[in-house]
Length: 117
Image (cartoon, rainbow, N blue to C red; front, side, top):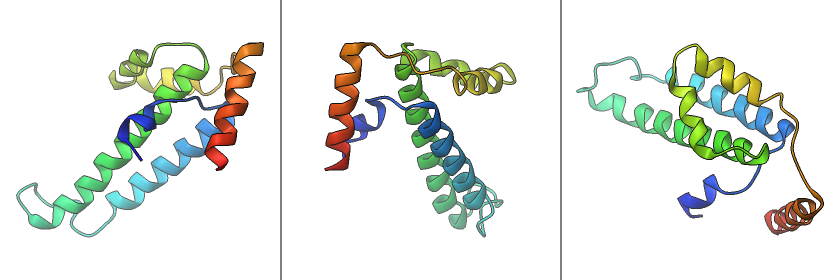
């Protein structure tokens, strides 16, 4: 799987919340691994840091895909970096309904069929 394919496509509200919960649980579990609370120069900390980095990249991809679903630019995901405002923005994104058109329904059905194969 190409890394660029993580950032293409759309996510409905349900898919977004499920994946968001999974990512946060993954990061919470990794954060509690032995060595995760050690100084950066300790070799035991590199693996948990790598896993957290992977979780953040995946989080970013689901956020961008959700933005695409509600017809917004993926660049708006940078708002989530801002403390407090970003958290509220991400929560609001999860509540906005999917915006589809008749032509988009065909594309979504095609994408879902390809994902199942």
